[in-house]
Image 1 (cartoon, helix red, strand yellow):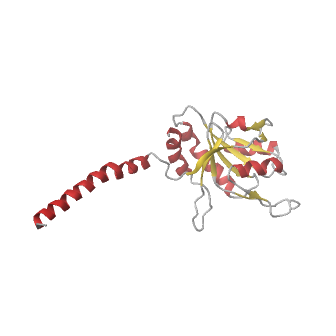
Image 2 (cartoon, rainbow, N blue to C red; image 1 turned 180 degrees about the vertical axis):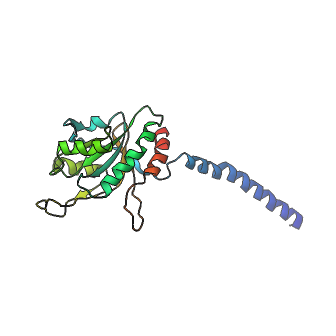
Image 3 (spheres, rainbow, N blue to C red; image 1 turned 30 degrees about the vertical axis):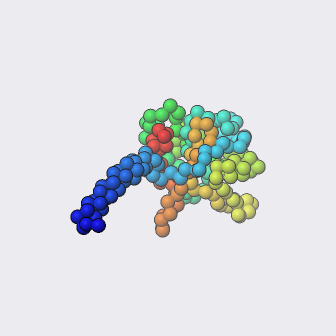
Length: 215
């Protein structure tokens, strides 16, 4: 083949490759701009199994309580010395901005106490109101809490004897998102940085929530 013709063929093929790249490669990058950057989306939103808990005002808290709103759910306990109060304070700090997001369904924060022995309704009420009076705290007996927390994709465990008044509770530090149909959609995982608490980054939540809601 003549060298000039060969060069022409190569140039033509390069042009075709560029056109194909513009048509098929560029769109995903645009699409990614409309996808959450930090939120770990579950493969499929999954409905919560029926549950019955009690909120910090003594009212029943069931699947229906989560319908019609976006719920940022955090599992912990009021005697937690670090992760729980820090996460709750972080969520409170971004709460006004979350409320300003244009959405037909409101965004709520739900704190699930997995320490029913010490976290009475009155204590939960005082605790959650300290951070924000619009936050909801719920609890129940372990036979109701265990399956509910597991259904969220989270866990908790009490390794020490509860006879010790200062026992600790191990629990997941992620913030789980439940959609207005009361389905678990995914979670914001905690940061892992040496020398720092492993908590979910509130600014990442704030950045991703508008994208998630508008999808």
